[in-house]
Image 1: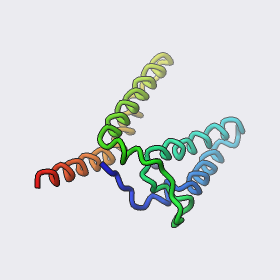
Image 2: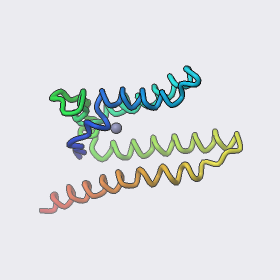
Image 3: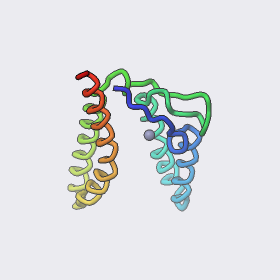
Image 4: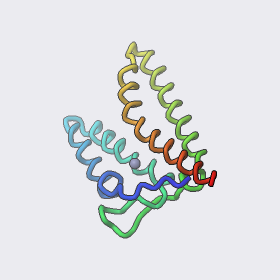
Length: 136
Ligand SMILES: [Zn+2]
């Protein structure tokens, strides 16, 4: 399975990751440590994307140079299964940690799952399309 994100330069390029990180960190400038952690948390998205993306992470929007080690392409469907288990592990950890504090993670989890649903449907349709091609 090759999950091609043909143009993600405005949200996932290195330059935009730095800009999004600075913007998010600036919202917490009241406490410089919190601002730094917030900015690094946003930038961690780019670091997490690098191994899985199929050489489609631009250095800056419309750059010729792209990054990505291509685990999505190499592992195929297994990468989606691993990503699903990783996400479920994080959700379970979060639910447990927040429950100890008396905080429910129900609504944050519901809202988060709604935003990921589109990605999973896209993966499902691309899998369906590739399995149909195998039938011909
Ligand atoms: Zn990304």
